[in-house]
Image (cartoon, rainbow, N blue to C red):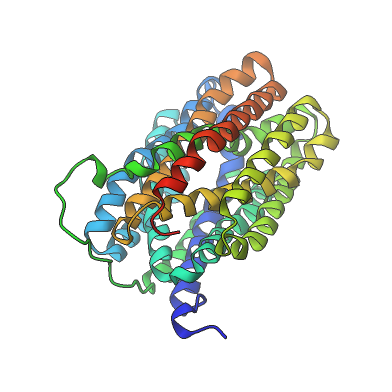
Length: 393
């Protein structure tokens, strides 16, 4: 029988999950159609689309270490609310702007807000999750973003094709405001106090013990960046432009299914085995996907790519959290999310020129090679380092 101290589904945790779902849903409404909007609406859109899309992710990545330090130093909730308000307000700005310069400025500000929000939300989640249920709790919390990923892109693509981009922005704004109402009701537990006060130094902003994992993530999440930002353009090249929404639905189904299964397995000590399985599946799936530029492969492999990401994403987060002390949860989550962001930003930034010169199928073949390198790095470097330095496993 579950003890009260090991109870996961408290009102505070449920509320946090719901508010995160609504914010991520607004993100994924806009994400798959923004690239199309830039390319189709602006004269130089095709040459700068990669830069504009990456500006958001790069800004989020740059602010995460500072967010981690602030989270571990001050009260969590004010920062959480500040970031939520800042992020949601940007969707209203999208309705008013009409130049590439303004889009770039707005993307930078929204990336800043998103970086703070996600770092804070993940840290609050770890605070709320009982240690004995950490693997399951992190997985279930991540499912809220994945569920939004399952519904958001399909909905955004449908709204865009039926009613136009302005309706997509307005829907994202309304969804974000609903999530903000829940965020205002969020309760947060007391911040864990550090064992001793340490002076401001680099280690207060970056989990040094997680450096090998951080580098590892850059290779793996390059492929996530090109998947999220260029799949709609690849679908249009294959002549199945409206099928991109279905691809994202299959992808997110794989992520959710794998996350539902792995939580208990992580709690039982199978984290490293699941990581190797997920990385191997991603490498195989992206390789077959790239070598078969046909609609059948486009749809058939979406689910398996989703399963792979569903295994490795919460796996990396658990590894980072287990390498830090309780008073370093903000830094651990900030470092994890910075690695996530930098990998995605690299894929987003380099994806456009690679696709322009070599084609989208070769872009995804390059992504497969990056995942393969990530698998080797994990087996040879990250795994031994983790086993030697883990604290909270």
